[in-house]
Length: 183
Ligand SMILES: [Zn+2]
Image (tube, rainbow, N blue to C red):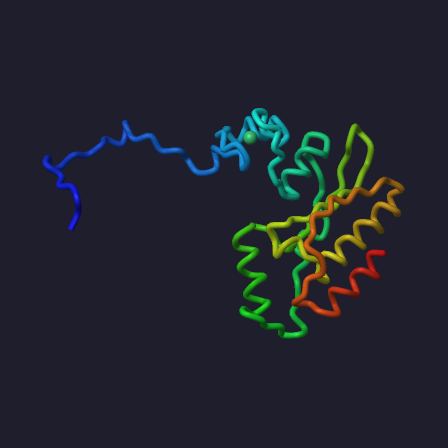
């Protein structure tokens, strides 16, 4: 039983008067909780202008900020993790990857791209912590190695934005091999 009783029936708010905030248009500073429009936060490079807190951003936002006009050619965008070990902890590895892809809209924990900064060619790799803690499995290792190869071939700089929890445990030895490959 409720504590209060509605004494007038049929009270409704017309659609015109409803004040709903469309999803994704507003963001809250994770430190001081000030609310900003997504556009304002982006214009301020994801730094809160009240308390100077730096929001965590993903590869997509980094690329938009870093590359001239936010334009770049994404490299190996479809490279997907395999599961040769048929690994399973509290969840199957394949299911974990699928769930992460659904949640983040990413294919794996790193995005690589070639574009320009101030008119000069550059290859950038940026990790995404939101995807299984930015862990390095075979996809990340391969994408970094290929991006570095392209930078060498194009005689242009290579930049990496590292935000990783470490090796991806679910790929065990295959993950550790990536360290050697990238080095
Ligand atoms: Zn703030």
